[in-house]
Image 1 (tube, rainbow, N blue to C red):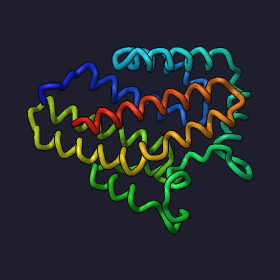
Image 2: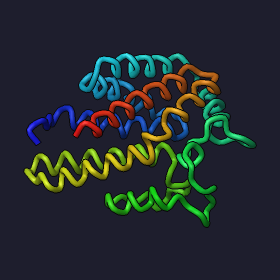
Image 3: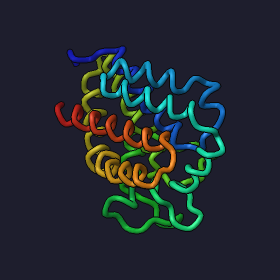
Length: 211
């Protein structure tokens, strides 16, 4: 693991978490917890392209009132009838229709293999974009800690799981999802969020494939 960079690894973990948070209902806590300043710091550590996207995202949030963001969030991801940009991976890749009794078992298998469990209070489906980004965070975190401890076999195994996850799940559908968000969003915030997410996941997929 000679290419391991602890600062870059931490930035990658942080950006996964921050992006995931943005796919939950928008709230004043985004600003109160300095989410976008932290996101910009992480993005700047990783790549200049991500820096530009993160800066625009923060500016878009600051320029928009929360009520308008909530309306757009609902239109895009919740409905009430048809969502404009379904946040579930199974909408965008060739899997059986999912219900509470027919969950996306393939991604659940990867979650189990990676030691990932959703919060007991989380009532949504497990292939939600926010959850898949949280799993990507966990994979990056686990790989980083294994590398720091010199456990190269564990780090390599985690990287292999990450390759499978990105190739078969998040990386396979994020571009289609991002296009739908950008086409349907009425606010710059969600257009910028989709652009940053797609760019980051694409970079993660490319880096993982290169290993």
